Length: 186
Image (cartoon, rainbow, N blue to C red; front, side, top):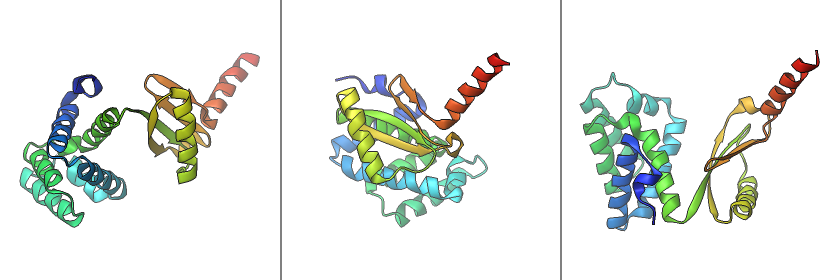
């Protein structure tokens, strides 16, 4: 099995590996996965939470109290609670989004999955995600975990990255390429 160090790196990678290893050791991987999914959604939905974790203007104590209240309100597991406390104590809450992404990579690797980063102009439905997952699985030959995000500037289509391979079928890229081609015609 590939070392964790080959999958993630940097500060966020070290924290993600520590949490992942503890979760495996305590047989709490599913609980931590669920907690981190909640946190990811909360970060996406709450500008106040993003400010709390990302702003250097808050003191260590303020961040610690704030993230503890968030964890309690979300009913996060004890392990995730402690982990967030360590991040706050070490002034690393700003790394939380990167840690969440690195944890997802470790989890996918642990499950034998490949992660596909999919960017679309609009949020994909569950059916669309399921269909895309099946197509990617047949193309890659392994289970695929989709990390979906939205970029309205794409106008339409998808941008899919699996490992070092990128497929960009977005309308924005097609229009940009057409504009470049038209410049040569003049």
